Image (cartoon, rainbow, N blue to C red; front, side, top):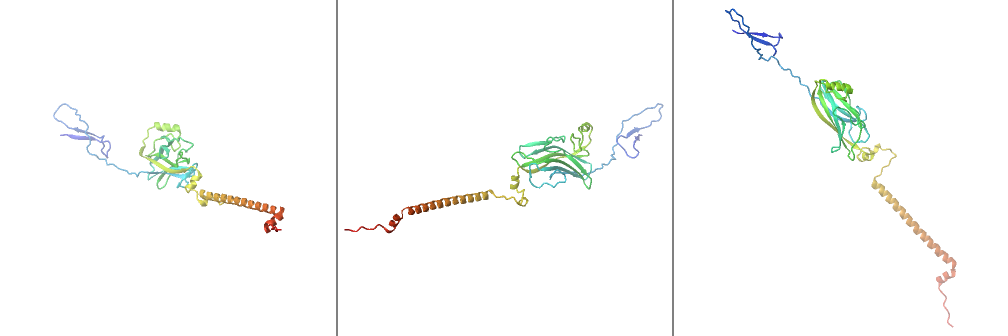
Length: 298
């Protein structure tokens, strides 16, 4: 007859490291025997999984006017040099998510491409864009807003400008970057890069924003950016065709006046010459008027 002896380390639950021994007793012998058996595993699974489901965070990008995260949202074309703010938003139902930005590019939708931020979040073109800053707001939703300042620029002979960034949304804390938006120093970032990071990246997304950048104010007028009521009252704008017509009419009037003056001068000169001839020989003039007298025959 066999008996099972169980060594249970937790008095309430059975676990996989509990030990089980099968033993038996024999009688009628004058010697003792030590019997060992291998550990018998527990076949019954007493654990029940507990699942927690979190809604994935939402992330989007936008451009605002001015050097401020609170500026108005951009809705139309801009001119080279206009102050703008690039913003990346992440909203989630939990405070356990983090966001990091890396590898931002600017391109014109064709072959021209310029890298603004590298994979470590460090700015590469300081004259074009500032480093990303961030703010976390506590409310009904966990909201993180990252923003960077830049002045509108464009590629040569192309008004189209596309800004594209890779965004990492992490459950927990994102892996440390050399130029993280939380203003980490390079030394502390290097130390965290060497340390064990247990964060779990939930999703990587690529966000982009399209802009129309005009080079000169004349292009802005042609595209309807500057309205007529926004111009000063003393400013008069004429189309090229109307200006050409006015100039042509003015030149025609000037030419006609010149011709009339010349004809009038010639007529007055002729009348003056005829009057001077009449004053010199009045008899000739009278003869011509009355005719010569006829001779009498003898």
